[in-house]
Image 1: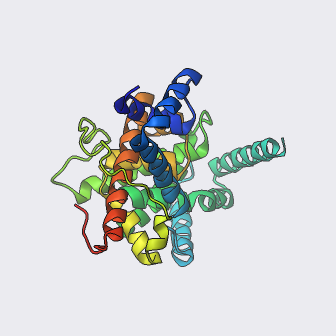
Image 2 (image 1 turned 135 degrees about the vertical axis):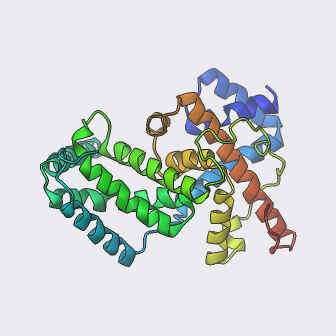
Length: 85
Length: 211
């Protein structure tokens, strides 16, 4: 397996949606290819960083305001099924 | 087992809320809004890059969902159906802002450039420790904002919101291979961009701007 083949399978490998045979080939490649090993680890870390750091939190005051506005708009709207969409 | 039962109970109660909301029960709909408003806001911010637009998307998506609840037949999860509405609203906002360009989920998919790893230095110690809270948050925002909309939308749905490949494909009207291909490129491009930031910080040039 070459580095390009490794990259092609990277997403399936990270998501655990890969056949045993291909996984074994990838892991064999990782044993001797330091660059792919780093790419795998830093890609994993990239996903964790974005998963764990919610960079767009909805502030509570804005949340309340939006919620009120949504419910008011719904009140003024026709009930479901009767709206012309 | 307990988790499965809990999940089943949540699904049932959600379905009951949807059924009640369909009959015009606004308290029930209000609970659905509270359940998902944070997620919808986050997705809208990621796609539009604009807080005002994201606020509009949250309001418009929930209103549209309420008005069209009859069309929700329960074949998919309510959340999947809602996100689909929100993503469409967010892409429309983005198109309006960038009236000179066509924004589509197919944008830039043919370019291999930017996906090939070049930075292969390890990231230890934890890069987060190199930055203050607000600088760290700015870097994460700038980095993801630099991705084409089609890439970052797939990344946000799959990796930030934790939806499955199948759900993401259904929401975006893409095939499963198309979702996988975008996800791979999004992950690799984000990794590369972050790596460049971390490298320049470690090299003592923290002010360097990413292109």
